[in-house]
Amino acid sequence: AQRVTQPEKLLSVFKGAPVELKCNYSYSGSPELFWYVQYSRQRLQLLLRHISRESIKGFTADLNKGETSFHLKKPFAQEEDSAMYYCALKVPSGGYNKLIFGAGTRLAVHP
Amino acid sequence: ETGVTQSPTHLIKTRGQQVTLRCSSQSGHNTVSWYQQALGQGPQFIFQYYREEENGRGNFPPRFSGLQFPNYSSELNVNALELDDSALYLCAGSGGANYGYTFGSGTRLTVV
Image (cartoon, rainbow over all chains, first blue to last red; front, side, top):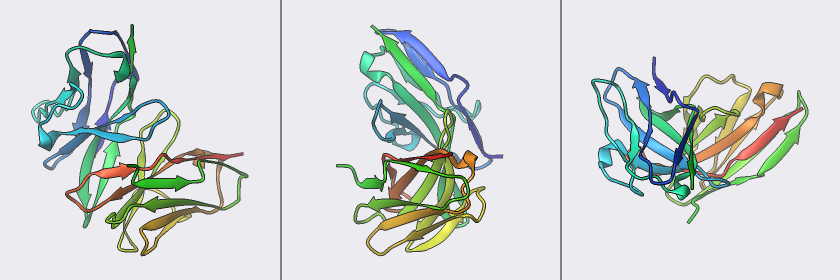
């Protein structure tokens, strides 16, 4: 079964603390994974994709196929990082692609 | 730069009624996908349209249907509304398999 699991509904940290948002996936093929972010009253937007291997707003995510994980990390959290974060798996199926999302983790960064 | 616009932003309907949600995507978005996001959950794939034809569907009944038009706009129609259809409905445009998805702000549907 294709599935994305984000075990934490809420992650609460203080400004300057390290952050790790967990994401595990279940997929038999070669995964293509994304992190999407939704700031308050804004639309869902792409934060980063694993194939780009880039750092966006200080966030990085490494695909670990052995552990089937794609955790999102940032060494020093900022208050403006407070948002909903969704991990998503892109699944090709019969000529089309769909995204399978996790349930999301709310990150709250306190001053 | 928004890319994808959805209307209306909010909607209240009665159980059993029909509803049409609209999405306007930017030029070049030849693929449009619709997602349902229930409260406290991540978005769930409903279906996808490519060049005005449905080419993929998630685990949703036939009373969920759609249309895509040549001007990159699309519709999501839901017949015989049920209380569980209450959710945020998201439209996402894409220029192709190797491109990312641009999401709209969504339509919040409440069925009473």
